[in-house]
Length: 424
Figure 1 (cartoon, rainbow, N blue to C red):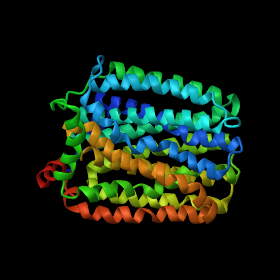
Figure 2 (spheres, helix red, strand yellow; figure 1 turned 90 degrees about the vertical axis):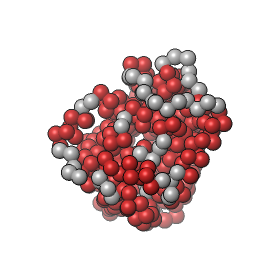
Figure 3 (cartoon, rainbow, N blue to C red; figure 1 turned 30 degrees about the vertical axis):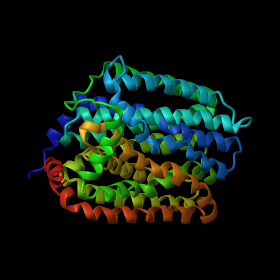
Figure 4 (cartoon, rainbow, N blue to C red; figure 1 turned 45 degrees about the vertical axis):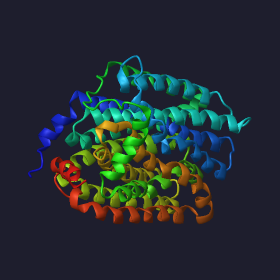
C-alpha cells in the first residue's frame, strides 16, 4: 500500500478534531510537572535531601492506578455535557483548586502537607487524563490515532513547557505561591475546550451495570488478544529508562551549576521546539514507515538521547552543550511518545475505552512513580554518569519484546488495526 502524501497528512493536522486533541493535551501536560519539575526545584531550594525528593515520585501513584476509577467513568454519565465532557468539567474545577492549595503550602514548615496537596493535584490530573484518553480514542478513527497522538503530544508539551520552564522563570522572580496560582488560572482554556468541544459519537452502549463496566474490559482485553501479557510488559518497559532518567534531571542541572532561569530558558523553552518537531516527525513517521519500524527507531533514539545526559557531567555548566543534549532528547522523546500513544490507542475496544486505555497508561506510568521513587538513591550511589548510562541500557528489554509483535505491526497502518483484530 502506498503511504499517504505529505499534503494529505498536513490536511489531517488542520482539522478541528486534531485541534481539540492538542488543546486537551495541554490540559493533561500542565499539571504533571507541577508535582515533578517545579516541585523538585521548590524542595531543592528549601533544602530537602535528594533522597526525600526522590521519594516524592510516589505522589504519582494515581497515574499507575487509573484503571480503578475508569469503570465508573465508563458506566456513569454526569447530568451535564455528556459522559466524557461532563466528567472533564468536574475534574478540571477540582484540579484548579488543588493547584492553588499546593502553592499555599510551605516545605520548610510542613513537608507532609506539601505531599498531601501534591497528591491531590496528581489524583485529579490522573482522573482527567483517563477521560481525555477515552475522548481522543472515541472521537478519532483508527487511522487518525497516530496523528491525533502527535497533536496531543504537542499540546501536552506546551502544557509541560508552561508549567516547568515558565513556572521556573516565574518562581525566580515571583515566588512559588504566585506561580502555582497562575498555573491554576491557566486551566481556564482547558475548561473552555471541554465546554465547547463536541461530545464524541460512540456507537457502543454504556455498560448496563457497574459489574460489566469493571469486569468486561479486562475479560475482553485478555481473551481477545493473543499476546496480551507481552503487550502489557512491553508497555511497562518501552520508556522505562527514558522516564527514570528524566525524573532526576532537575536536581542534576542544579547540581551541575545551572540556575533556575537557565533551566527554564534552555531546558524548557528551547527544548520545546525540539519536542514540537519531534511530535510532528513522529506522527508523519508512523504513517510513512509503519508502527513497528517507528517504535523500533524512536525507541533506539530515545536510549541514545538518555545516554547523552552523561556527557554534560564532563562539559560542566555550558549552555551550548545543554542545548544540544536537550534538543536531541526532546526531539526523540516527542517521536517516541507519539508512536507509543498511537500504539496503545489502537489496542483498545471502544466499548470499554476509558478502562482499557487506563489500564495501558497506568502501566506506562509505573516507571514515573513506583520505580522512579528510588532514582534519587540510584543517582547518589552510582554517580550521574553511571546513572544515565544505566537508564539508557534499560531500553533493551522493551525493544526485544517489540520483535514479538512484528507480524501485525509491520503492516501499513491503515490495515494493521484490521489484521490485529482478525488475529485476536
